[in-house]
Amino acid sequence: MQIGSYLTEVSRVVAKFAVKTEKTEPEKEASGVSATDAFLKEARKSPAQRIRDQLLARMKLDEQSLAEMPPEKRAAIEKQIAEELKRQLTGEQDRRGAAVDLTA
Image (cartoon, rainbow, N blue to C red; front, side, top):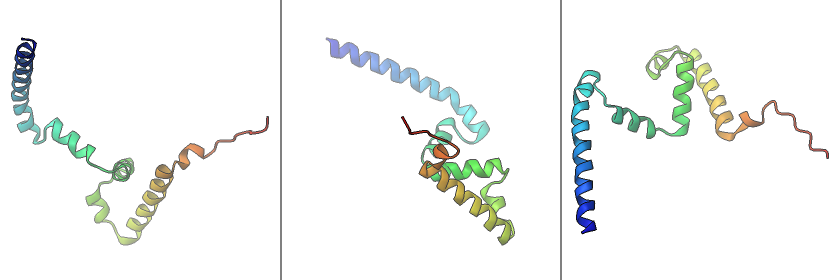
């Protein structure tokens, strides 16, 4: 009988979740993107892509505006991004500026 009560509880939770999902549909229609879709889009990005997006946001740019820049300016920004990616992905930011005395 425990299995029966377990299945009943699971069905109740699923039904409760379905009702909550239905309530968020107008919100999805208003924004065009649900929170789940936005989360999944961000979660599927590689660490390098997340860092790149953060750097572009700090510079108040996006991929479209970067593509429209003159080649020289774009190359300079791409170089900055590449240096920052290398620094963050190799962990150099942890060592930079740290003085350690290893004598005992």
